[in-house]
Image (cartoon, rainbow, N blue to C red; front, side, top):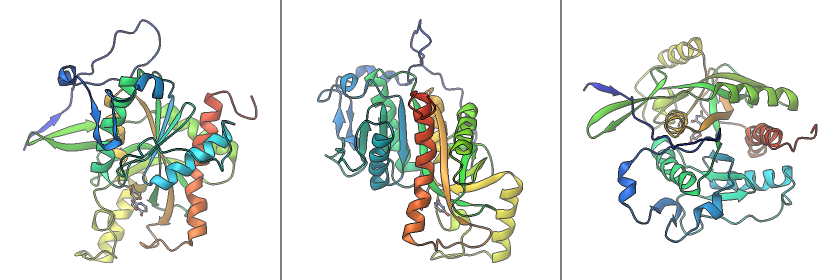
Length: 316
Ligand code: R2B
Ligand code: URA
């Protein structure tokens, strides 16, 4: 099947100011009277998007609903918009597909595991931001990953998301044809996140390529799944080749995240902590307490960056 490399058109809104709007590119939406964001249990006929979300400037997304709730509580404390122990209501309480929390200009949304799950969430999130008329939005995925050649607990800021063959692209079948999209992320934002890590000075952070796979076990060359038809040597050779190609961690959402944010004209970054060094093993053996502390690291980095952008850092 021939691949269709995208030169998909973006519908850019006429914009006399320097503000950057969210792009959607779907003429069919003009024919829909009320847009129902089914998996968020929100709709333009029932919810006033500009009032509810018009001030959003940062969207932080991550796999688990409880982690995104604690992130919203943490950022509330950091931005002095509430106490971290305050309960924050789930905007998507009418569904258990995704959870969404809002603290001032920061939206925190869960996306589940894997490309299909985050892709569905992103279609609805991008439309939500568009309907709300949001401008100058930055989207950051904060997540967990398997590291390659890094001490566990290190944080990787993604320079480029690559597929399991190390290609910097996201491939999807649309109408039976392969469509290939670019997985470029915002380089300046990645550098700013690295800078934030230096300022915090609490844990190791590197910028590197992130491999995005379709599976946690065979897809990530593990030896501990229910099935495995390769040898340990073959696994190690693959992971070493990945390391030599500049890949520093492996996770399961970054490629479609990068591709969709790029199509929408959104500034985007991926920040993942590493829970295991895949050159040393497959199983995640750290205690619950250690893993909980690791998972706060991307949150600390992102919160530092958001505070700087909003002029709320200690230094300002
Ligand atoms: C990281 O962790 C999850 C698998 O355990 C997956 O969502 C990912 O990208
Ligand atoms: N998430 C992944 O996708 N892989 C790991 O090894 C750890 C977390």
